[in-house]
Length: 261
Image 1 (cartoon, rainbow, N blue to C red):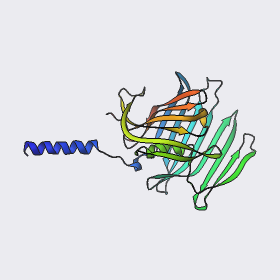
Image 2 (cartoon, rainbow, N blue to C red; image 1 turned 60 degrees about the vertical axis):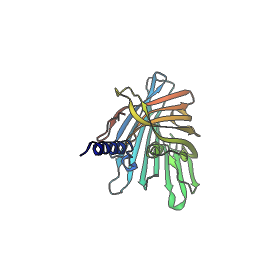
Image 3 (cartoon, rainbow, N blue to C red; image 1 turned 90 degrees about the vertical axis):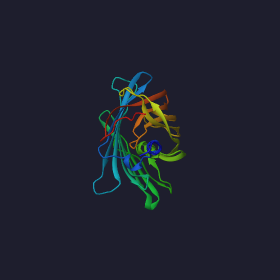
Image 4 (cartoon, rainbow, N blue to C red; image 1 turned 120 degrees about the vertical axis):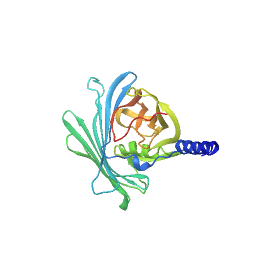
């Protein structure tokens, strides 16, 4: 091979590597577990854990779970939630079919159940309070497809391959709202304490028009791994008391490690 042909081959390989694209289908992986610490300034106020499980016999369907809990040493913050969503990845879109939320307080439990009936164009909501009384029982007629308070975590990962702004309908608590997300696939770097090198990432930011767990409302930003997994690495969130950060502390995912530049 002549020198000119050899150089041309090297150039083609470099261009192919640098222009590599990733598939959305690789974001959701069976048995994934992600654990985050929640901090207010330098104070740890809680943690969040996310799990993904493939549903046997239903191609493209997953059960995703999240546990959010405040630090027991923080007397003014009392957060203890379990979230469960059944979602479907279909033609690059994330469709949420059912959402269940449990809130725990003093050995009692409050429950919210949301069924998304797309064929009939309505969402059914029921909330049972800590004393087991029904406080919300309603039907929301809509032609829109909503994300719930948990599925939005995976929706953001799936759409982080794009360069666009989305107004995303979200069902939060027992009412409809939305959030604006500015996606960008421009590469950047981010640091987390569990990794001793800068991690190659992509960035997004946006605004939430609702109030969620830990008082989340308003502006937010996040960094996802610049690879097929799109693991959320770090996030800054505006809450009622100021700003909090979520940072990835541990993970279980087949063949994944934080990507370098």
